[in-house]
Length: 395
Image 1 (cartoon, rainbow, N blue to C red):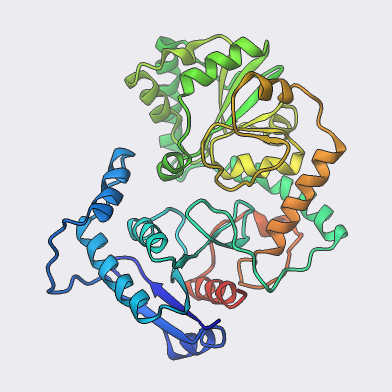
Image 2: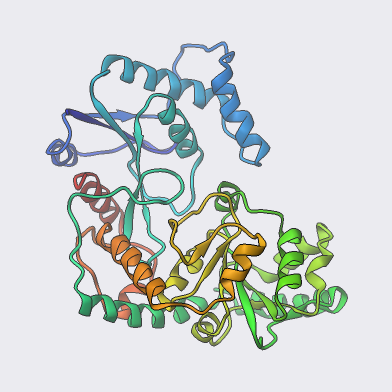
């Protein structure tokens, strides 16, 4: 079947793509169509129920989408689909963003209406690996071209990758003064809130928090108070909340105070931020609670059982050791010992993730040196384009 590709850039930036880049993509697609965010002179009545529902549904979750953009993009996609009824159409941003942008939400929702395959080149939960996600939920689209993963390289990757996670957790902020002031404010605030902060945990389960509001919204995380009450009733050990290293713990505790979440004041709850022994903290936990953060998924490397508190499993797909319901039956399952069968399924999942991704240079190669997993950023924009093109051409 003939297939075509629609590329878009984010609003406020000119879409620049060279003839060489287009020619490279034309090896795999019959047509390359570029979309620029510029409101046309055409006016819209803004009276389509299905389009207004897109905006209203996201608004309920706290995400504001521009209604003009929704109608403008809809008009564009309607014409493309109407003129190419028999073609398989792919749609992708021509950029890599650490957060989900407004334009991506809109294109994703409208692509579902017109049966267009939305794709998203993005950073995998495995540092310096990049996937082509088939939705906003970070589940990879299977590629025809694969990265070859040998058993020896896979085992070496796991051991060295784990070592790099500690370095990322301990990164210091740019300003030491801000760090000093923040520590003082945290101590003052916790004196009044009576929260346990950076205490050494004993027997515990680990809740790994993220710092991305959009991922939390997409995950549709259940009520935390209900979870904490059920956890404390079913288990006699502690509950440890690991705050993201890029988050300001003082701001996090202020939110607890503002929202009057007094259920966090239980003596069996501990908060950690940038622990010196992150690897041991993960390894020694009874199980991990998943809130869509990349570290939650990375904990699979340590063969941990995972409890998902969201209705949508972001980053990780269904595995027998991943539970997405907090009922009594699943709590009992979490009490069982980790089996060799569970470990084999995790290995299969991680190898699949690695083989369906490229490295930071856009190459279908697996680096095993721990230094290659410490830094998340790419060196330049050219690398981004190489990553995107190689992923799109691997369909």
